[in-house]
Length: 546
Length: 40
View 1 (cartoon, rainbow over the protein chains, first blue to last red):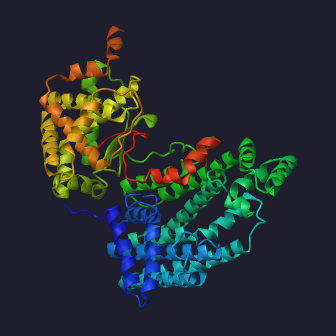
View 2: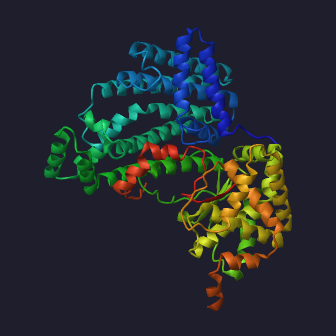
């Protein structure tokens, strides 16, 4: 089985190559240390599994556009990461914001030199990508997007440094934002080129990056106002989107009220927040971000295929905006998973629903593919998320492969064999939710869902039950760090609801071991699916009575 | 293009969702039940 690079592999590849560039450079040791620390600090701000970071955005667009050349993608990924690191460091020097960062002791002169070094290393990676690119028009396009973006960025930075405080309208603030975040547009266009996009599509992804950056800026402006103890933007008198929304939409008396609040020292931040909220400034920010979100979806609809990665990009956008408002469902739904695994999920769900309906099961929740190796029922959305093995096997396989100490191919075969159990497990959570029984004690809910689902497959899908038992035995046999006694105690505790809210409090790997421990105990127990359902989903009696 | 007109979260909810700590919380590699129930 051929698996493409997973996101963590791509991110690790880009970061280690960036560090190797630093090590190979003709720099003194202390400069190398500063550069390494700068890059490490940026990479540590997010986990390698997190798609909502710049390189996650790069990789998802690369895959949507066709993923033509991993070697070029890794080089353009390095270029993007080093370019962003350089711009970030220049910004810190100019904003006098080196405190708590690697260049704090070194000071602004050395920091400026480091920023220039990072930019030069970025150009090194860009040059190498151009050299191995066989289509010379595309190679030239890489250089053009760098020049075009950099010129926009330095113009906007100049305006920002002068204290562009005259921006009173939302349009003016948006224009100011646009240049400051052009590196995201650069990254999106580079990813599209690496993926194999033509000039028209690459331009669309530049625009997508600009639009996403505009949304990020509005959200950042709101964050500065509401989520910090001191608003840096207010303290430095910067024009921000929420303020512009307020000034544009209220009468002069209220404008004066805000100006008076802002003239105080110190500024009464709570009073400012309340005034803005009362006059709908944050709602107008949400409206602006929603316009950006819809524009991103329109751009996305015009280009690319790769349904798994398209869905990921949509999730990145939706996760981002959900900090500000609940994003409404898309008008145009993404195509449901139509591969062999997706069909098996739907088939298993229909069979479970049919078997459980006489016992009071009501209706199937939404079934939605995603990139994680775990399945998840989300009550608020009445949705079961399942691993999209058809579209994103490289994101799913490593977790199971490591847990079972088998090859990625064997791991995915195991996931497929045990699928009816996992689907029944998630649908039991949904069933409990439908009956109003879903509690806050996370491990107790797992106990119930495992018991009901295991007894179901043992009766109705015996091959799946055998596969699950075999996988659990293997998982615990190869788990060197599993705490068997602790796991058994947790299973014992989970058999009764504590009546209190409690979380899993463990890593996904540890959770898998506890599930395995539980299931091996259930395999030794007698009982039927109907008995389990009557015990743990007791509202069925009222259905029977109706 | 017809954009929907969403409402921003309440001030207290915005504060919680936008704080850097909350963002990091989601990235620490731990399973959390706050959003849903999972099987590994």
